[in-house]
Length: 119
Image 1 (cartoon, rainbow, N blue to C red):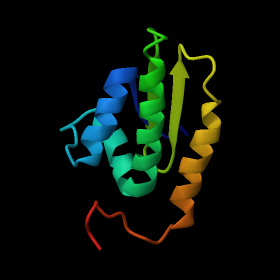
Image 2 (cartoon, one colour):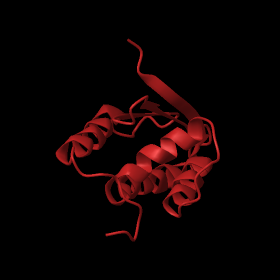
Image 3 (cartoon, helix red, strand yellow):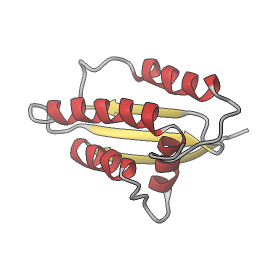
């Protein structure tokens, strides 16, 4: 059974801008970018904060590496995210990051997603 839903490629700069746009509730209208944004907004404090940190790190390294590509994928149920970074050999393996994002989704299985600022 294939559960892959969305996959999108970003440059280092566009990945950083996408994360910032998503965290300010400016969700893309449709396409794979929208599914990735929906995943981030399920738990914006954790997913968004961690991804913003990663995006800033990748963007900083893009000053010395000009061929960085970030590929982000989520599944149909928005329960996992996979991030692959090419062109940056010294970055840690992304399965480590994927593990923490998936772990967060299962820590609070009964809590509905909220947007920033809601109680």
